[in-house]
Image (tube, rainbow, N blue to C red; front, side):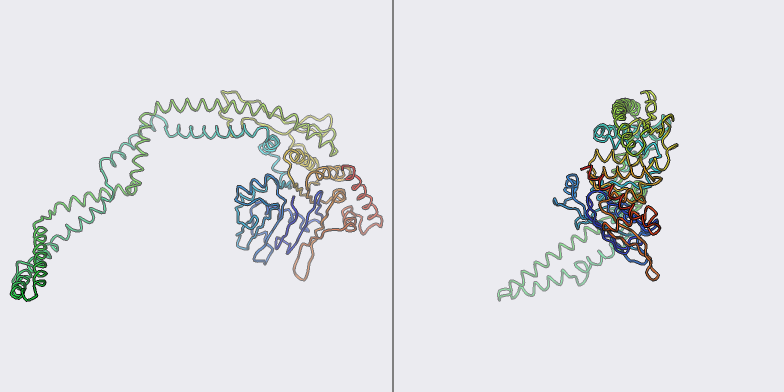
Length: 562
């Protein structure tokens, strides 16, 4: 149940706080006063897309916050989201002038999809947009399947998995291609794999060659430096080695006087210098072949070209492995094609069997669905109505591939006859606005009874309805309200009179600003609002008397349901 909602800076509402109760909660007011803004606010709490045009003009930000009682289903979802078990769910949605918004559940940030999953079994909203959507056969099928969800859930899950498997097989068959396409791809892949394989690229090879190229290009400079160093150390006059030897000889004459350590150290240095000189000679003996430079340049160009085509070493290796596998598949495509065709036939057979089983359940359960709808429509003043689901002939196995979907192969449409003597026809071609309102109410009741939805919201369910029919709709809403919390936006006095809680929405102008104001009505206020909706308030002194009588009749009806 939706306990309360706080709204700040949404459309014309600067601030509003509504506390809803059990039973039937009615929102009424003049056309354009902003009744549907309350529904928009609830939609935002349920994860609907935020449009910055909803923000009150001139405000930097706004907020909608709702408090819900927690159902067993909501407990499970909260646990999946990492929330501890709590007795209530507080959903807060803040929105800003730049179009950004954020959603929190019990103080923790969540995504819109997460909050949709949480609230999908807490609140069901019927709005005027459903008039349009229900005109589509696909939407009619979805509504019927929702009625059957407990009966067909396992079948539809298996079917969806098999259809996904079929699409993968079909993708693989496309990759195998026709004979001409295969030959062309084989030639391309052979060239690419052989090019990579023949190159025998090593990890880090390009960097190593670049360093070697740099050394060969500097050969003259290197040799000159080595020769100069060698000359200074041992071959020139005076040389470092000669000078060090002289120093050792001089100190040797006094080594017995305590200078033997210094003599040892100088001799050690002399040995190290001689070793360095030998190393330099070895380097000078190396011959830098300029022809190696040409080979290195040629190899680097090859590696550069491969890198441009296939990427670095890791990506080139990955490409080679994938291309080699695909080449193998193409070369052996006849076997693979036959295997995939066998798999496809088997999978289509399984899909067909599942679709047949699903169709059987639908046709069996369609009878109870039709009877439930007719029953509720009868209580809504349409006792002569006939309602049927028209199923098109089911495809044969031979023609079924064109009909495969994850929802099965049934093609169905709602058929309707509102009056005796009239034939059943496509519902959306003949149904009136008032009939559609009652049909959607009956549909919501039927589905609501099966899923135990705590809160049901009806945004102007009374379109095209008046008089005795309006009273019948009010009675039906009250019947629903005995087991559900119901929120209803209405213009009908009969529905308003049935309310357990009523909110009056009006538009006010203060200075140069327009505001939408929400007031919870007491019993006297409810009588005046019923009189206003009846059109007699301010015209006849008897208007409030009639409104009070209607209210009493509704209260007596509610007592009769207890």
